[in-house]
Every structure is written in C-alpha cells, then in structure tokens.
Amino acid sequence: MTSPTPPASGFRPGHVLPDLCLLAAMPLLVHSVYRVFMATPIEQSMGTAFKIFFFHVPMGWLCMLMALIAGIAAAVQLRRRSSAAAAVALAAAELGFVTGLGVLLTGPIWGNATWGKPWTGDARQVSTALLWLVIVAYLLLRHYGPRSSDRLAAALAIFGAVNVPIIYYAVKLWKTLHPSTGVVGTLPPDMWATFWPGFGGLLLVSLGLLGLRIRQLRLADELDAAWVQLEDPQR
Amino acid sequence: MRILRQALLLLRSELRQELRDFELLLTAGFFTVVLLAMFYLSFASLQARAHLSALPGLMWLTVAFVGVLTLTRVFDREREADTLRALLAAPIDRLAIYLAKSAMALSVLMICCAVLVPGLWLIFPAGQAFAELPGQTALLALLGCAGYVAIGTLFAAGLATGAGKNTLLFIILYPLTTPVLMYALVTTRALLDHDPALPDHLTRMFVLDIILFAAASLLFETVLVGAPARRPERPHRPGRPRGPAEPVHRDMSRETSS
Image (cartoon, rainbow over all chains, first blue to last red; front, top):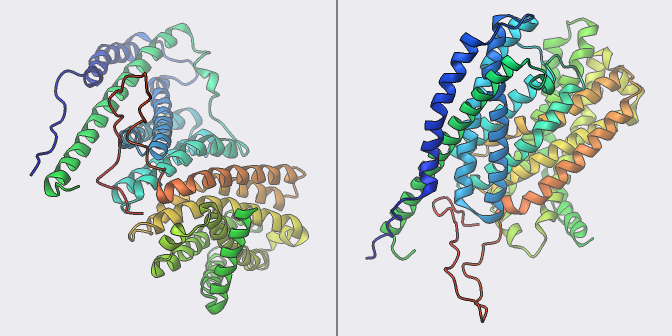
C-alpha cells in the first residue's frame, strides 16, 4: 500500500503574507480609532452619528471587493476546474458575508440619525441588501448543495457580481436619498486623513483573513485527497 | 441554425409530453388561481390608490412563485426518468437543451400570465390599464417572464443533475432574479400610470433579457458537465528543455460523475 504524498514543507512566502497583513493592520486600526474619536471634528449637519461613516463606507467597499473577488475566482474555477479558485471564491464570499452584515447593521443606525428613519428603500440600501442575500445563497449552496453544487454555486457568484450594478440602476429609477459616490472626495482634509488609514487597516485585516481562510480550505482539500488515497490506493 | 432545429425538436418532445397529461399547465394554472384568490382575500378591501401601488408587486410575485414551481417540475420529469443524463450524452448541442427547456418554461408562464393579468384586472379595478393597453401588457409579461426563465432554467438544470436538494432553487432564484423583477415592477408601474416613457422601460427590459440569456447560455454547459479537463502534460518540443508537468487542479472530493 502506498502512503499518501506528504504536503510540501519549508518556507513559502505566500504563507507568511496573511500574518504580515494582520500585523500591519494592528497599528493602522489603533491609529484610526484614535483619530475617529479623539482627533476628528464633529460634522456640523449630521453630528456625532457621522463617525459611523468611517466604519460603514470601508465595510461597504470591502463587501463589494469581496463579491468581485468571489465572482472572478468562481469564473476561474469554472473555466479551469481549479479547486484553489473554488477556495478563494468561498473565502471571499465568507468575508463578503461578514462585511456586508457590518454595512447592513451600521447603515440603518446612520440613516436613522440622518434621514429620521433607518430604512428608506434607497437604491444603494436595496442593492447592498440583495448582494448580501446572493452571498448568503452562495454560502448555503456551497455548504448544503448536492455533489455538483460547486459549479452551480460558481455560476451563482458570477451572476451575483453581474447583478449588483443592474439592481442598483433599477432601484435608482425610483428614488435615491443616499450620498453620491463622490462624498469621500469632498471630505475636509481632517476627515480625509482619518478615513484612509481606517480603510487601509480594514483592507489589510480582510486580506489577512482571506489568506488564512484560503490556506485552511486548501489544507482541508489536501486532507480529503490524502484520506481518499489512503482508503483506496488504486485511485 | 442547427442549434435552433435541435431546440425545436426538443421543445416539440416536451410539448408532446405535456399534452399527454397537462400536468404542468394544470398545476401552474391552478396555483395562479389560488394566489389570485389569496390576493383578493388579503387586499380587496384596501383603497383604490393602494391597489395601484400594490398591483405590480402582486403580478410579479405571482410570476416568481409560479416560475419556481414550473422550473422545478420541468426538470423533475427528467430527474424521475433519469433522462437528463441521456440528453447530455446525446449528440446534440447543450445550448439546444437550454433553449428548449427555457421555451417550455416560458410557454407555461405566459399561459399563467394569460390567467393572472385578466384576473388582477377583474379583482382590482385599478388594473384597468391592462385592458386598455393589451399589446404593451403582453410584451411586458413576455419580457419579464423571459428574463426570469433565462436565469431560472440554468439553476434548475444545475440542481436537477445533483441528487435531491432541488428545494435550494427557491433560495438561489429569488435573490438572483430580483433585477428582472425590479425592472418588471418599474415597467408595470409605468404602464399602470400611462407613463409616456413606457417604451424606454420595455427596451431596457429587452436589453436585460439579452444579457441574461447570453450569460446563462455561456454558463449552461460548464455548470452542467464542467469545463473540458486540462491536459496534464504539454507535448515535448525538440530544442526546448522539458519542464515539470503543470499540476491538474481537480476537486476530487466533490467531483461529479457527469
């Protein structure tokens, strides 16, 4: 009976990157939180509630980035039958779920303080909520779907990524109250200097967690393959 | 042309099967009537102004519910007789299978819309515009149902190839078909309001349908049977050193036999 091939050992630069991202994020996040609450002036029209902007907007961007990564990785998975791409898509979708949930929880708090009600059916609110629902559907399909559901889930991720601008435009035909995308560019320098380190910190945390989760999923795949080989050496 | 001919042959076979027992039409049609009755009991006592706002939602919610029932049933027949595998193994283009199944589901949905729209007009007088603009109403129903079917057929087929779990179609389909239903809602509201921009809305729906059909057609074969396997080793060319073979990434644990 042949023993399964042991995983390659030794130093791989790609394995250290997630840890480096997480390490680099720590000082940035501490600096960002200090600046948000101690060094940034209170916005005149929205008051203290505006501080949620420094967490809400980066999480919204990260959610869209993760959906995009999941969509691209799913396309590669379908095209090349790559289990590595499938792991990237799943890890990105899981992070998209977390960041999307963050956006959907912080958005109504900010909306309630600014517009007087937490949910207005605004274009960006609806499109974010639907993107999050697509991510949840993708995760459910990956975890509970039948044997061939990996390919189906990949198609779902691709459609999910394509759907976002379509949904956004459809809802915008009705009404929109949301600040325009150019709001970050019009921030005063103080707020601008607070926003980018916070976004950088959250981006590094997300990339670090993405790398760790991909590594974990790949290891699980290798374990499965080793188990199959051990049980049935003829395969 | 060859694909269209194959699709027509498959569609004819589907229709022949349906005409034997009318199972799909009767179940989907009856479900439409049940939904109409429930809408009547729930909303008939509301003000006429509220009816006008609610009608687009009621119409497209019905299409969404009946659509899932239809799509599930279209592929359940194949699953029960284990004929989808035979269809995939047959010397026909996979795109023809997609087109035939889509056309079948679309036909059933359009027949249900022929019950639904007059039903809504009879129950809610605010839907008078449906009777005043029959051509535009028919086009709206066709474009909305076509977009829904374009996505739905792909995912219903994907779930039909697996063992069981086709209930997941509900989870997948509703978030994904939201753009189509959103555009359909906007267009229905424009129709009910006699909005002069109605042709623009219908054009947008047409363009969206084209995009969805194109995307689903591209993905159909890959989702059902997977991309062609990559060659494990490149042929050796004289004069070039032979490098290590590229690894073939295969998801061994979850690979299907199809």
